[in-house]
Length: 117
Image (cartoon, rainbow, N blue to C red; front, top):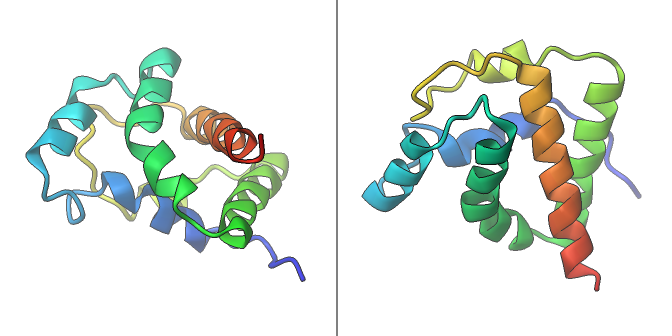
């Protein structure tokens, strides 16, 4: 049975970049070295830090994150409630939160496809 989309799980996914989560100076340096408003650099950041995290999740959890992103992007969610509740190491504010989440979705779909090869 598929789990319904829940916006709150996306905050958990992005906790990887939260100031309260990162105790590793190398990870912190990677995060601050990327321009998160540049699609190429954001994708690089996700590839470095999100790929290993996401691929360690169960099949059902990965599917839940992907389905949730697809759903909320489809209904026009702003994602303000997610970004307003986390404090990240990002040097800049995320200018286009929907674009950020779209890039995240594209990366998660890519990682998922790599797993099912």
